[in-house]
Image (cartoon, rainbow, N blue to C red; front, side, top):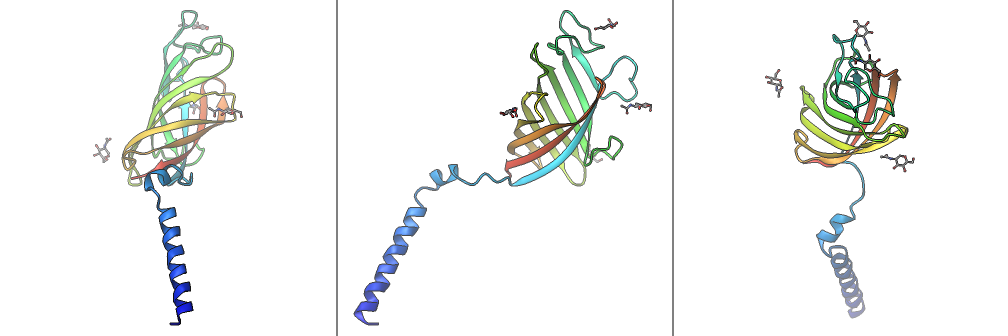
Length: 192
Ligand SMILES: *[C@@H]1O[C@H](CO)[C@@H](O)[C@H](O)[C@H]1NC(C)=O
Ligand SMILES: *[C@@H]1O[C@H](CO)[C@@H](O)[C@H](O)[C@H]1NC(C)=O
Ligand SMILES: *[C@@H]1O[C@H](CO)[C@@H](O)[C@H](O)[C@H]1NC(C)=O
Ligand SMILES: *[C@@H]1O[C@H](CO)[C@@H](O)[C@H](O)[C@H]1NC(C)=O
C-alpha cells in the first residue's frame, strides 16, 4: 500500500467508526423510535345476541344493570345510558354467525353517555383451540357512532403472554337491539 492509499483506508475506517458509534448511541433511545409495525395481525368477528325476554336459547348477552328509569329486559331510553351488559359471544374467522367458533369473547360493555350512543368495553378473547391457546385482554372507549373505534390490547396470557397493541373495531352488522356483529382488526406491537 502506498502512503496515500493508507491514509484513505484510515479515513474510511475512521468514518465507519463514527457512523457505527453514531447509530449505536444508546439502544434505549433507539427503542422508543422503532417503526410502528405490528408483530402480529389477526382479524376476527364476534357475535352478540342480547337477551330480550324471548330468545333465551340463543342469547349470548344479558343486561345486568339498568338506570332507575329502565329494567334489565330492555335497553333503557336516553341512549341506554347506565345499562351494563355481560356477554359470552362466539368468535368466528368470517362474518357468519353459524361458522365454527374459534373462541369466546367474554366481558361486559356499559353505555356511558346520555346524549349520544357510546359505550365502554372490557373483555377478553378466550382461545382454547389447536390454533391459539390463551387470552387477549381488551379495554377502552367504544364511541359507537364512529365507523371505526380503536381500543387497547392491554395484555394477554398463553400464546399471547405479555402482549400489547391495538384493536380497531367496526360494526359489521346491527339488527335492532338484539344482534350485532363486531369486526376486530387486532394489531399486536409486543409479542414474546
Ligand atoms: C335464535 O334461534 C332461533 C331458533 O333457532 C332462530 O329462529 C333465530 O333466528 C335465532 N336468532 C339469531 C339472532 O340467530
Ligand atoms: C321494561 O321496560 C320496557 C320499556 O322500557 C317495558 O316495555 C317492559 O314492559 C319492561 N319490562 C319489565 C319486565 O318491567
Ligand atoms: C382446553 O381444551 C382442552 C381439551 O379439550 C381441555 O382439556 C381444557 O380443560 C381446556 N382448557 C380450558 C381453560 O378451557
Ligand atoms: C372517532 O372518530 C374520530 C374522527 O374520525 C377520531 O378522531 C377518533 O379518534 C375516533 N375515536 C376512537 C376511539 O377511535
